Length: 301
Length: 275
Image (cartoon, rainbow over all chains, first blue to last red; front, side, top):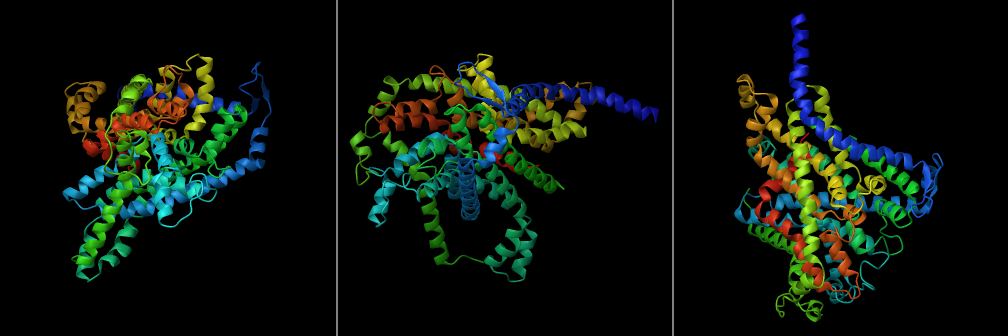
């Protein structure tokens, strides 16, 4: 008994102590430059504070900024826009990503080369991606309206400037950039599948489609869930491509919550209100992250 | 279950369409950077035959401070990458090796941090940097990038180290090495591929960052994405010059996806899917 206590004390000081020393620099760094700002952000969200105010007065208003957020029509509409954007991008990317993984999953030289080229979009600066697509979508000289017109579609002032086309147009940009990431995740998932069920299926005379629907899809469920949560969290954060293409317009068709927060804070300089909105977004993403972690944990068991 | 000829044709056509869809925007960007203005936006588009010119690159390097923007991007990316590796790799090792439940759970804390929406961090961070008078410095961007970069490195290296067998380190410990010594002399050399994988991810993340640089840099410390945007919204819309500057901005992405893709993919999958 005594010996084991002595041992665990020894372990704590020698072993965990050594590990703690390796972890400490990062912990201190993160507390100072991440946790402190987040707490600070909560504090600002309780104040009315305009950055442009010459006296920099901060008036305590309690939870008023939060109350205002939930009754603000612009916020509610930007939340709806966010949901459309997230649902649109994530569902299309999951579907197409799985398709790409199946199409290009072979271990042939050519498939490998194509896969490495497909990695490029997600490594590009999103701002550059936005500007390139903005040029491609341009009503006067863009190639997309040109070919659409040839095919008999009327694109008016270009996809980014038309009320009913702007959202699909920015969703397409996201799909272009991030579908390959889902291909990579699904490829890893497919590779980790056991081979026995397939062998049994062949013996039983199952067709390729049958083994896909009855074996592959069910076994891929954990990968699917992880990919869904990961992309949902990332999609909530979209900023650069919106900034580069539509600036939230036309009207507020593509003003996602993330972009709206930036506008409130950095264009209208209402720091308190912006911080309150940012904290609401933070809570939404935190709930998703915790779900994601729970899925990861369960998968380990 | 051999594929029929029809299936083969359909799959080939699909593959060609996929490649076209994903490559055309990049092809457009690179070719536009070598075109004269009138040809860049000719209708119908000139995909293959056009007068080749280096005018856009010449303008990008002489009329705009492109070299300055690139240098700034290199400084910020290098700073954030080194800082996040120095802080993150030992921390990831400690979490992977420690038997303390508390330390093990702390990895989720870093995963949560990684998920924080940048805008939520930006507003308070902007005010704090203003108060400590670091707005417009490299340090401000490097620090904020490192929060996200280092969280990724910890998460990634933790799963990497847990796949590295601990026998060799234990042998070193028995021989009288300290835990720190075992980490530096035994585990670290074995984990170079993992470090490369996380470094590549971090490099891409910092190099591509736009929002943090937008808020925290000054005209002197502007990074390349901001430079592109600024040159673009100036008096005339110089798409050709924009394209030339963008080609500089996409160099890391091209190198990493074409030549270092094995490491890049490892970073993406290990970082995303391993608990």
